[in-house]
Image 1 (cartoon, rainbow, N blue to C red):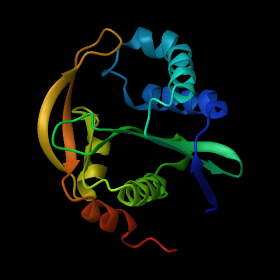
Image 2: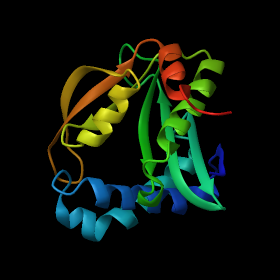
Image 3: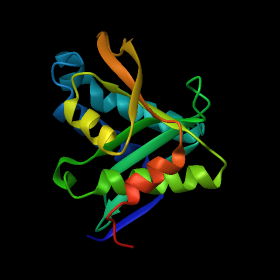
Image 4: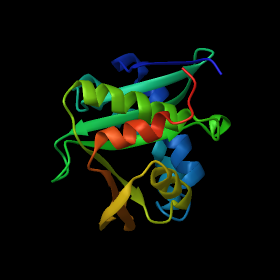
Length: 180
């Protein structure tokens, strides 16, 4: 599969927003409010990503393309969570690309870039009801070390923090079995 991954730029905001909203509508039914998912997610995410990319709110945002079509993205912030150097704020893969190793590839490339910048540890938050995502992160050696509640879009969704205190372990797990 021919995937091109590059640093996102402000012109990518709408593509990222649509990937984000589509992913939420596919996976967050019953987690985020139905009215938000049906009527507000696309416009809200477009405004969010337009602003975030223009303001350089993220330390790293990578966008994956397949045959020039945006199919996945990952976004990382620095020094957000106590005890971790970086936090993966978003990782979303288009439904048509699920199960092809793209999430693993994005995490691997992100881990490489973070390591090159001196990052030693990384975490992320995932909704408790998003069992497939939790299983994916655990398969990469992530360990749950905190629980909380995300109050987004008028909803209260339970979530958990999954972390890698050793970025090298995530790097090894994300590249295991991947052909160069």
